[in-house]
Image (cartoon, rainbow, N blue to C red; front, side):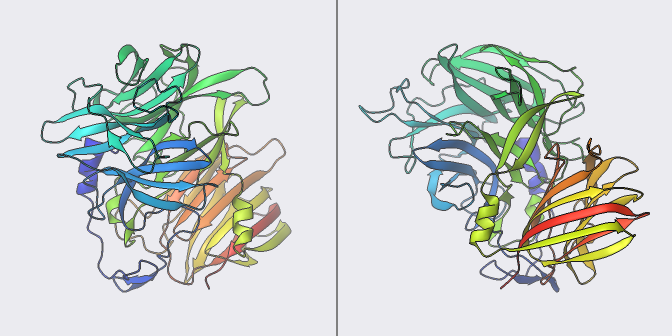
Amino acid sequence: MVGVCIAAILLRSLPVAAGFAADGERSVVAGLACSEARPMLHFTPPKNWINDPNGLIWFDGEYHLFYQYNPEGDQWGHMSWGHAVSRDLLSWEHLPLAIPEAGGVMAFSGTAVFDRTNSSGLGKPGRPPLIAIFTGHDGAAHVQHQNLAFSLDRGRTWTRYAGNPVLDLGESDFRDPKVFWHAPSGRWIMVVSLAAQKRALFFASPDLKAWTKLSEFGPEGRGGVPNWECPDLFEMPVEGEPGETRWLLVNSVGGNGPTGGPACQYFVGRFDGERFENENGADTVLWLDGGKDFYAFQSYQDEPSGKRIGIAWMADPWYAGATPTSPWRCSMTLPREFRLVRTAEGLRLAQRPVEGLESFLRDRGAQETQFERRGMHPGDSPTGATGEVAMIRAAFEPHGAERFGLRVLEGGGDSTVVGYDAAIGEIYLDRSRSGRVDFHPDFGARFGAPLAVGADGRVTLTVVVDRGSVEVFGNDGMTTLSGLVFPGGGHTGISVFAEGGDLGLATVRILSISPE
């Protein structure tokens, strides 16, 4: 959950400019034509504010996405659990509010599990329950504690457990439980953040109601961060090494991330049912994403293919309350598939867009464009494609170019630049001239993350453009960048550029959808 310290930042965000269109599709903001079409590929609510994804679970043929939601407005507050379901992670059906704020206690972030043996006793014969485990935020008492709600109708309606809270330490920053069944020890495990102390606490339970403390982890990783929140813990196979697995512990940090602001870090190690041990040095810092708009990551439970798929909040809490959209505020990232691969530095996560994205675009009329240029001189070369929604796969041989890459959402002298800086070995996203950047001083900037040229001498990029966002996957997703953008209307150009020298080769394949 975007907790107390981050919430304070949200409440101090700059006001949103007036002039939104009533339907939220396109509008003129402060005299500037901005493309505010609702994203096609990214989840947004029908209206109002959202933040963290919650309770990600696959159950009975559906992917459930719960999320932090304000049913009363488009700024942070009155936090409750919104709800949607999907069969492909790209088309979503909106459902009624799942867990509302009650009695002045907000429903902060948490998990959903399928209690298949009815260990909780909250089900009925032949009807095991879905259980939501969430943080209750009692602002008046300055306390956060863990609570249960249950559903017997495939998650359509929810009832709070009469014995709440099930875990209360009397702490003001104790939040965001991730709960899962640990088969080797035959019990439920919870990892939950003691946020201000930058510690992850581990508890065990036979029935989801009575919890026993097992151990603690932290603080490790990035120093100088204001808090840890939104933990996730899961086991993954090591790609190409049969029988070899590791556990991944993820948390979100409220500042001092790779761009200076909030971000998600992760640790690789082992979990024996009681204790997590980091196999890297305590000061090793690993980021899930090097961009500015990737926070509060959570992964799916019970995914039927066995893949590890996750979603993050696509926003930066420092300016999320000021982003120029209406009637909704904020979105989720694309669902991503995660792989654990061995590199020279150790085991690292790699990411790619969820399977089915290309088919989804083709089914909606996407046009395919192929571009290839050998010995490309410095300058810009239009690809011949246009689109406000696009999936781009590109490969470059740097040769003598100092910087190269793609310009997307071009128009009126503006563009969003997805580039590679050969001098420092970094992919970057430059949105300083991407359209509307003046609504917050932290928005218009260039940010990047390290990426080495591949063993084949190439840099490969997969770029997903979705009207108001750009997500970049470098070299098969070893480095990723996520960023919001707010281009003007008609900004749909896509081109290749080189600076400071020639490109040996640029090949680009584009699936794109232009405005109607």
